[in-house]
Length: 144
Image (cartoon, rainbow, N blue to C red; front, side, top):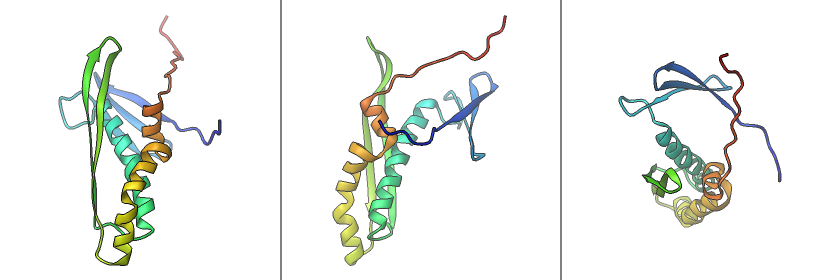
């Protein structure tokens, strides 16, 4: 198994059911329950899958032509069954438009394979969801 740089965020409580996630580069994103505009953890998972695949597809197709439009919609259904709460029927819908001409034709030609390559091999987020990875936990400090 090949390992590359560790990925990490921190998550700090702002108030009940509201947190701010921070990355090492100084980026911040609030998340919480569905009572306001903040992203929920499920929405962040969907955004992570869509964002990862969008970046992959963008790199592959943009070598041929810059897209005029590259929009994605990521959805899934939340269920509760004998396996617990989870999202099923994950669906990524991609809407891409490329300019007329040779470069645009080349980009359109590789679009489907770029999506497949991202889903099946390149996108770390979708691959982690598809293959599955156990989540370990550790309590660093506890009140006595």
